[in-house]
Image 1 (cartoon, rainbow, N blue to C red):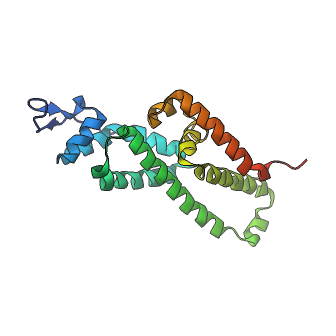
Image 2 (image 1 turned 180 degrees about the vertical axis):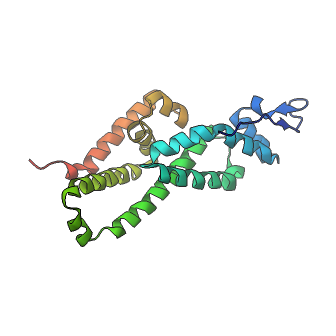
Image 3 (image 1 turned 90 degrees about the vertical axis):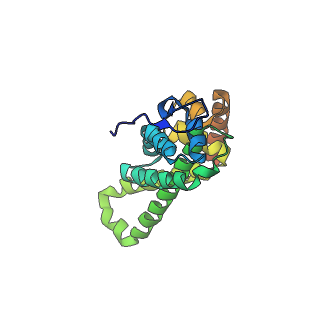
Length: 201
């Protein structure tokens, strides 16, 4: 892993040179918006392991996770000037990562569906159960992604990505109790959406 170096800010907001390593994520973003491009570079290098972990947990496989991460980083560079400080930087970055994961997953889903014909399904033979399971996973992920934003994020983090309630709380910038209640509401909505997948009695 590339080492994150401690760069000095040339700005004098704190009365002289200040190391980027001593700045919070929010301070680094302000520094970038003030014209110091290296501040965003330092911020992303510092948070890259966390961002990569989020992408891997939200994506069904490593290749899709890597694609989503690259898309997300490109989006951060395009939109960093628009960051308004209403949330933590890590929460803002999570939303970008989540959206990139959804976009990449849905593109892959379309390609997968286009590659499955009736003939190819017949050729699967004993692998039909695997195909059914894969399709079920696709349906479940789509149902989660279609939840309202306030419910989707807690459900994605806690159930799809297996973060703890406390970890999800930190990423989303909301109380742990709110995460729990939104997960419960999200599960109830998912139960309705996915009722057709339940075995028939």
